[in-house]
Image (tube, rainbow over all chains, first blue to last red; front, side, top):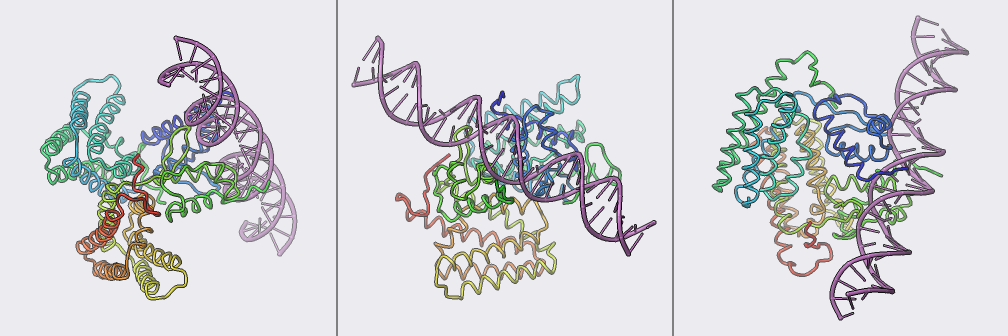
Length: 235
Length: 235
DNA sequence: CACGCCGGAATTGTACACAATCTGGCGTGG
DNA sequence: CCACGCCAGATTGTGTACAATTCCGGCGTG
């Protein structure tokens, strides 16, 4: 048989995207066989991908019972964002001390891209969402890289980067997204000036503002079942 | 063939212990076949175990080249402990607000066990080390549970809990271990009193003191190759 | 003598087969 | 009618075979 290479990573990314963008909904079972058919691979790479996703906390896995997409309660969202605010604040603080010119360039490029994605008019709204999301990741990623703290970077990339970040932009109106853009610029300037304290505070506030938007949204839909978010499914 | 169950977890724990206790040294290649023979299993569960360990950052894995035990530089040790101090400080803060009576009991039990392990005279020094390490984990674990923040707990258990913690006790002389015991008690009292600010500060300081011991030790052996620690092996 | 090509051994990546386990429905007995 | 146990289908856990890749050393050529 063909036995193509790199299929595990491919499976990992496809499943991840499906979860992060909400196509695989919380509570949904992820049967290895079925997913294998969907992506035309055998169970083995799918299985490996699921294990990675489990390690990241995106799916929950029980012995002999398989994997399900993990949901989050409103309380968990709040806690998660508190945690993220602290971690990214710390990252910004470190970046202010350690960032190198090329990394700062990358940060600037990300900010420009964010502004461009914000200004452009897209045919497909989902595509614009993806562009903003990508630019946002670039900005935060550049700061993380600039912090030169590998573990911290992995924690933030692979554990705190849950579906919420992407979903969040759906809830952001234009003004809020522009506010994020502004914060990115302020954080950038603090980092460039080597002021770790202010960079940290600004980043903390930036994340907490995002948290507010999300929690506000969740409070509004509250009892009902939103088509993107299911808040049930406690562990 | 026998096809025993639960072998993946068994392989995971055995490999993990070997790394954490330093029997598998940084830089050492972990060949799936060889480890499988060592534990009398096939490659499959070994492979899964290695993927989990990779997700935790204990081993490094490159495509088509396999896994090697990950080493840490002195700089990484310093950064890691800074990070851990912040995360556990936050955990202590949350625990002060959220801990439940049975969790506080568990914390007390851990502290008692730590004191007992410290006081007892063991035949085998390694066994005493393990007992102290186990009690220490119990103390920190109880606080983590009391924080009621699942993600934070996983981050600390599975990402920051690197070989260093166990190794650290080898470097602790009696006075330092007793100091740790004291801090545990102070932290416990702050949590019981609901004072998150002080619990956080004490925990931060507790971790940073451990950091000092380790860094001091690393600085002393510095150039040479210690039989527990190899500080080279940058990514 | 330096350099690059080729080939084989070692190892990982993927596919597949089978065993163990769980789930849900059906039948039997109280 | 309900409780209990049992059987069949579905799904995961593990073992194993084979394909693909990497690594290393020998050999030939300039």
